[in-house]
Each structure stands twice: as C-alpha cells, then as structure tokens.
Figure 1: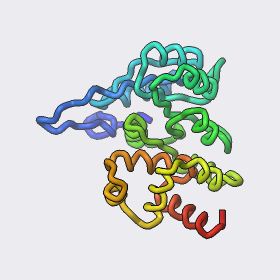
Figure 2: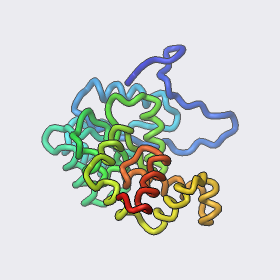
Figure 3: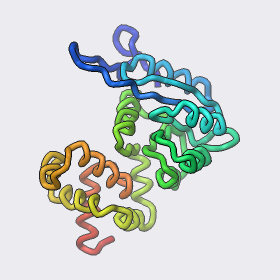
Length: 233
C-alpha cells in the first residue's frame, strides 16, 4: 500500500492550486494489529495535504478509547483485532453516538462481513489490496458523507438471498425518488434540479442507495429498480 511515485513521493499526494483556501485536514485514526500495515498507511497519509493521522491503535479496546478521546473524522478499522474485534468496536462506537465515520479496511471477512459491518454502522468497506489512491479517495468520500464499497463487497451483498429486495425495503422515500430518477438515466445534476436539492445531497443519496442495495454502481442500481417494477424481486 506504499508504492512510490515519481521523485520518491507516494502516489495519491494532493496538490493545492495557488490561491485556494485550505480546509481543515481530515483527521484519521488507524486501528490495525499489524505494525507494518500501520506504518505503511502512516507514510501514505503523510504525503496527503488534506489528511492528518492523529492516532494508531493495535487492538479493539484501544481503538474505541482513542476514537472517543481524539474524535477523528474517520476511523480506518480492521475487523480482525485482538480482544475486542472490529464488529465489537463498531457496536461500542454506535452506543456512544460519536460523529466519527468508520471505514472498514480488512483482509477477509466472509460473505456476510460487508453487510454486517454496514448494519453495525460502518460507512464503507474495503479490502487491504485496495489501490493507495483509491483508499485516499475513499477516506475523502466517507468524510463527505458518502458510503464506499469495494466492488467485491458490493457483489457479496447483492448475492445474498433476498438481498436486493431487503435493500429496496430499507430505502427512504427520498432514496426511492433518487433511484427512480437513476433508472430513468438522469445525471446527479438533473436529479438535483428535479428534486430541488443540492447536487452534493444527491451524491449522498446515491451512495446510500448503492450501499443499501449492495451494488457497485448506478447501472446495477437501475437494473434492480427495473426488476422490482417488473415484479422479479
């Protein structure tokens, strides 16, 4: 996860245009029991202008305590932790009602892992073979309120018996409106105009729709909508 780019810099470093106003960096805590993983992630984040690493935890109890104490924007969480595992961490954080968004970054989690993690409060689910640039983008996206799923995780969720139907039932009224417009081929900008909301709000709704339906992209979501309307789900 620490491949070097030109000039010895890790790929994925952000460059700010002259004259632009910098937002506060996205604060991140890493929870992983492998030192080499933590070190690699730390190096990756060090070259990002908009990400600040504020803590590293090596077990579940430490992850909970550090997250509650330092209140990071994003917790990067491995599910396989000593003592309290990742699912336990999610449960503890949900019980405390903090604002931290949790992005799961794990190796393998079984076929039900992605769905269980999202149900427990995770905002995203990625595997450790993710490209470093994609991981950085995912952190930014989760921080902005979106839900991020690895394609493999989305596929596992969609393949669960009744997964699509359960996902449809979980959609809010507004999310159903967004899905209907997606199925009609509308862009985010067109959906925003139709619903009279900000385009950023539409992006958030689309991310939630994809996560709840367990699909990787808009096309798959639209296909599920068509199948439901034809009674195939």
